[in-house]
Picture 1 (spheres, rainbow, N blue to C red):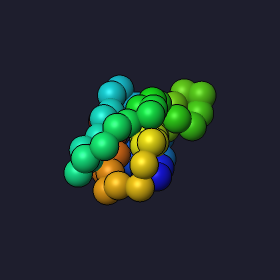
Picture 2: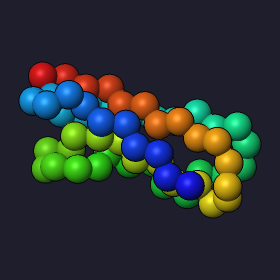
Picture 3: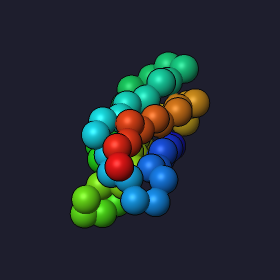
Length: 57
C-alpha cells in the first residue's frame, strides 16, 4: 500500500510522517519536486496507513 500527502501550490516540504494500524513501513520519504512537494509512505503488507506532510511557503 502507498499513501501520499501533498503541500498546497507554492509550498515545500519541511517534514512528514505517517500513522498505521499495524505491520511494517517500507519507506517514508519526501516526494515530488525538486523541491519536494509531498510525503510518501509505503508498507510491506496490505494495511491502513495515513501519510502527513508539514509544509512551508
